[in-house]
Length: 384
Length: 248
Ligand code: FES
Ligand code: FES
Ligand SMILES: [Fe+2]
Ligand SMILES: [Fe+2]
Image: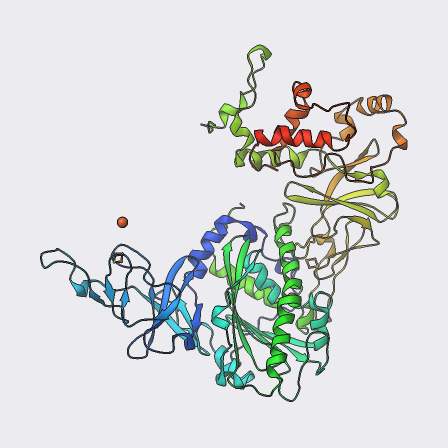
């Protein structure tokens, strides 16, 4: 895996100043983020098993731009804008299976490769020739069985965007390819998180707050043993497990479970993580709704067959802990930070950078903000 | 309701000639842009009540207060000096103290940055390979504090004219009109006029500045034994229908 070292030797005050607060509260910034980031980067759409057979489709959207993913007759996964070329009605809703895509408004029909099949007319009607009309394709690519889409037709492929990351995840979590999408995962709605999407990412990228902010989580880890590396367009960090079957977070079975924790951040808004416990890989996608609110999409993989009779119970306890302990703890911090970002006196925070210890370092946040600013480069947004 | 053609119209709304003057136009009670200007020009530059002297008696005692979108904390230092700060951590903007109480240091709950009671940054959690920065450049931002008649006020504008200076003679009047003033302490129960009035701040102030409506609208005044509750309900009944949008 390529690991360009950005070596923060002795950073001056200027290099330690965090992204200015206006980026967390401004409506203008949000509009630019849509155009410059979210409409031009790879965004998670669904898992390939959700479109397993020809004709299976899943409708989704990226900040209001409607797209659907479908498997065509030849078994290829494709994505299209979910909008009818006739008069822009939405073509498909939710998820389902069909042999032909029929628009509900005036029944124009399209084949699974996007070509127009039929439009209703009399022999005397003047209408466009079938070959002139088709659905607008959207770039589509895959990583670890997850399907991603990109609204930018000229975007580099996933392999070029995040070079080596897929291989590194497979090398670190070799079981992943045998996992399946967790039971019921398709039905789980995204979580509402009432803060700017970057506050969610910032919070994911540092564990300075873990020792006191997630006491039970910290008990499960060998908290001094964590470190990070920065990649060109991503970051990776890990925590070694304390190896405690009984700990304050949730029970582990060292014989059947994965123990160490691994996290990847793929710029701008995707995370992959393996937690301690029954085999797993979680995908996270942090998306804005407005400047001060967002959602967290989560899709998890699990072993295709239980590793042992107790696995389901341990899985359920881990999920319960996530929902009832870890996430509320983080949410309280993140909401408060959002309030703080609105305070007129708070212009800009500080990065704590430590090359030797992930526990104390915010080098990954800094890396994220630098990539972000490069992407958003252009005149500074005005405070709003 | 008429919407503003231009905000210039607003500047000459209340006429200097009392015989022919009109009240402020309705849109000035609902317009979000006006509210934005009110925050900048009025609320962030004037004195606001934060707490009573008795809550800030000991070194380390503090109270917090909210002024529109801003949060401040007032704390008595070890040497007895009363100081006020914006209640926001310089690290990554988490608010610092909550409510009121007593503390030796100001510790941020997110990553434990620690500030002295004078607002200077004392400690940052760090490991050995750390890049350091000048702690002096990350101290809390001060706000003006003034004790007036035993009440502690704050002003976000650090250069504001002192409160006592702005209201010459008021302190004397208060002490003359309210006998044994200094022996009074804050009510322990809920305050009389606390809570969400569901009315804009100007509607509320307009209402307390006249008693034209008193005899009609307050049938029980004076004679009632529900004394604590009545004025508040009265205020709410009167101002809610004149509802001025969600300015509060
Ligand atoms: S809009 Fe789709 S058929 Fe008319
Ligand atoms: S936000 Fe206060 S210590 Fe990090
Ligand atoms: Fe119709
Ligand atoms: Fe956390």
